[in-house]
Figure (tube, rainbow, N blue to C red):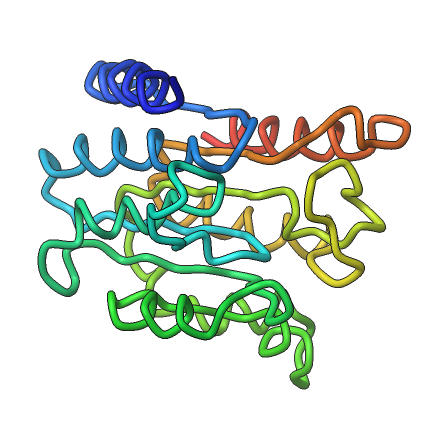
Length: 223
């Protein structure tokens, strides 16, 4: 079952982090963002620094569990289990697009303490979207601390990442993303990276898969 597989991933990833390794999770559905994130936050409880979870995504993925475990539920589960009181960890959603998110989910995530940087907010300002994003993140990047970065490939424009189940014409471009990602890798202690929702059958010329591979490569060569 999906739940059993999640537990296997959670246990294996947690053990890897305890041994001092970094972890790369590859999707598949973003439901595995819970398994990866739970392993990270369980490990982070043993550290002396406040952890941060950063999600690049078109979707909030905070759907309740009334329809079972889906790619829309990982951060609902993560916030329910680990946000025992406000500020236990920082949670940032970057690139959220209004056409594919419920206002109820948006309000719920904010009530749990999530910082939501929507795509319209980032893209419509005087700065380029990546500069605006880094400006909004500046206070969270002042000191190194444990981080889990989740990248749902559908956060990218379909011009660059059409190989996913929910692609939109609006969204990140690779150059802007890597400018933000590089700063995060330099400022934070990124122990875990997840790249999700890549679907090779929906891809063209392996463009989406190559983008995902570049993201993983950048992480692995960042230390």
